[in-house]
Length: 81
Length: 81
Length: 164
Length: 164
Image (tube, rainbow over all chains, first blue to last red; front, top):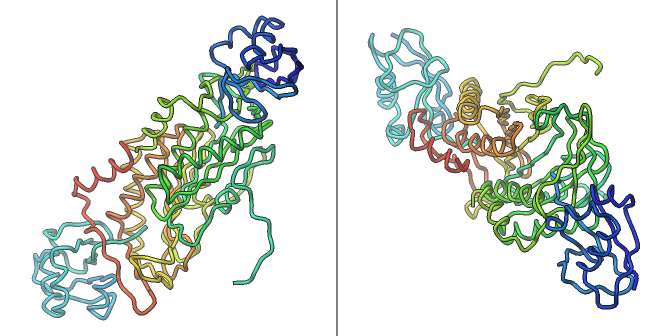
């Protein structure tokens, strides 16, 4: 199934786009979507332990299961204020 | 000698004036000026242990010696802010 | 008092528009409010030894607004008398301009101070906002904390800094 | 930047004029200031179970201004990066209006918060200003602390409340 992935800040720069489509198996988790994306962009690997994520504009865990058409967001370490 | 005494808030109301002249002996202290004033207005006695004072627009101690023409201010407990 | 017809300003906002500090506070003004504490973060000309030219803030705006709402709820849970409003700017922000304004109102100054301080610490911990620093000779993404709602140690740090 | 000819606002002021919060902060704005914390005290509609009609503040103005200067020096001694500006209103102040505004600027938010909180505590301890409350059915002078510069216990309380 296809999910939309939104990327921000340095992650967006590495992927070269703010939004990409990723194909994941039925029952895949947010972590699986990250793995699929990291396979495309090896520089993302550095963020494996420091990212957090959101699904459909709500904070989520990497273990959350995805559904077709979900919007996943990967958030590098934040620096607002 | 004569000194000018400035009074504020409730002290001003008790004395009925924001500023009064008080006659004190040469070498008198701020405390002596207070005693002279309290003799005139007995309701001031309630403030004997809670007032503070200033001489010529600077914080002072009750033991400070006065000079002719000095301006003494008696300050009831404060409540700014 | 004359009735005035106007839209109340949003309590939580993420926008490219310059921040209007008075508007942030007015979004939570109430007749019983005795204390208003406003925190404004301004872009500094130097950071980590670098001469900063300007900052660019990027945000995941809908989630950032939700994070402000969540932080305000956390604060109100701790200090029930306090209400918070938070505006964060995005896009290019020049030296001396405000990137963020937080207003806290309460009948009690202790609660307003604590809620305001707590909010800025929590925003730096969990709000999905990123600072892109453009300095003399280069640029860098500033990366702070992993945004983790379940990190109770981080929350305790925010409470400690709020002096609670 | 274009040169502008204007009088800088006073850092310390006691006046019957309404308080302009932006002016207080602008009196100490500096290019390296990353954090501005502003405390504003508003007149509340209720106090000690009484419906307040309005307040009247009386001050020994020249000494009050000196006390603000002194408090700012005490704060700068403790938090060298922080600068303070303090304006207090006198005369009749209505419900919802500001009686005081304190602005603290610093490159560091911790110092700006601490200096601002310290200042309001110290003002309530030593500044020669008195609040005359006019309430439904009467009036009363509010009497707080004996203004005593040498009271080190009071100063410690202010430091503790500033969380230091």
